[in-house]
Length: 100
Image (tube, rainbow, N blue to C red):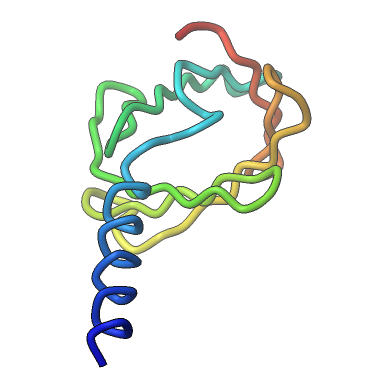
């Protein structure tokens, strides 16, 4: 029983620590094309068009799932597929990394 409880506590701690880091998305990205949207990914938050929103991150292979915890997109999850370290795709847009 103690082992199960210890494993559960360890899993919860690891999950809680891991969900605030944007991992490979860390930094500022800009959408290519007609919508030059810029978005910055930081620990536990994103910033775009002057709006800072609380988020959680989950890295799954070559993608990062960004789930919004508040703001206009509360409850919405967006998957950013990493093409390479400086290119990502999400919501039919291609993003290029433009800053750290």
